[in-house]
Length: 296
Figure 1: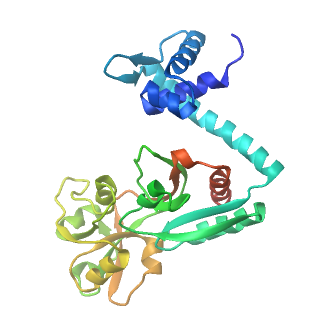
Figure 2: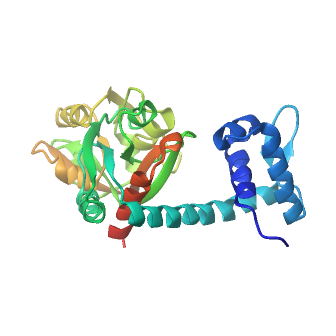
Figure 3: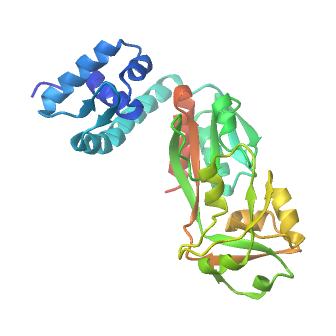
């Protein structure tokens, strides 16, 4: 087999992610026919179809799905290696605006310190982003990258380093019956209205923070809605409902009128570094690498 052409790989990845030849061409700054030509060349190397294309839709074949799963991490590693070499040769300068929901934890601050040590010519700006709109500042360009509470399913955004795995706790008022428990099960949430977030946050994200059913299928009552974490904790203290929070957030926002009870049977919470696909830069990738380095 002749040597692999990187543009063929890039064409396949663009089509696989966009599922549209025109948009894939715009992303690669080539014509739609050139994308088709590159994809056919790759399929010829593989010996099978990778993409099914009709007048109505574009989709990957099962083989294409498997190739995408194998190829994307390898391509990202190649990009990272080249960016690291460029950064070492030229230095990562300019400014990096990093968004945070609430407050930056020790993990992020350690990564910031390492990033500054590695790239002293790059200034960083810390920007607090709304708890009720974790992805809006990325779409608008207000920040270059952001540390947000997962999940993240936005097609226009890229999920980089995932870190800070933490168990969840239920914030309740000190007068609530649950406040006397050493721990709770996820099924216990069926007896407690959960305060949820309103605003621009997508529905899937809001439901992840305040689920409406337990893992066993019991309905969880809906409590009031808020736009900030502080508003939610004020309602918790007043006995208007409860909130699910990770332990570090609970510790940071500790109040005398609020008790945090561990909950078993729920998925752990995670933070992720996210950025807009169209505005990816060496600075962002360098900060993601710093996060990965302090996570070891």
